[in-house]
Amino acid sequence: MKTDLRILRTQKAIREAFLQLLNQKDYKEISVREILERAMVNRMTFYKYYSGIDDLVAKLIAEFKAFYAQSVYERFTSPNVAEFLQNNLPAFQEKIPLMLALQNIQTKRHHLYQDQLDIVKTVFLEKFAATAYDEFKDYQATMFAMAVVGTERYYAERGEPLPAEKLPEQWRHIAAALGGK
Image (tube, rainbow, N blue to C red; front, side, top):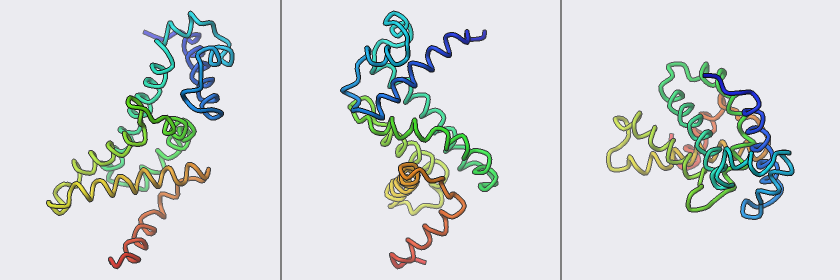
């Protein structure tokens, strides 16, 4: 069953209006009325799709997390990392404004940055548990997740493309600076 294009356009207008407002003001300061005015939809239409702003945010985060988790999983199961990055970085780059906006929402219910850390950590533990030192597995997974998500955010905040092919070399330099090989 196909979704009506009008529905998709309306939902897109609501989401884009919310994200524009989120880039201008704090999450808690945004009202449904402001979203309605910017999206040019009526209150009934908004509530047809979302029970409120919190529900809108939850759906945006859930969609991004599904995309992100799939990407992280595919990255660690891909036999050719360079090919994976070449094929998937454009889709990630396209979602960066969404990611940055949603990472700025920190509530008991919404915490995308921490969710991203948890996703990377979980996949690391699943894929590399056999090669990690047992007593330090959790630490290694946590540090790896912080490096990955922190790197994504570092480049995203600067508006620079993620130089994925150069990152392993940069991490080797960091390890060398710390006295590693």
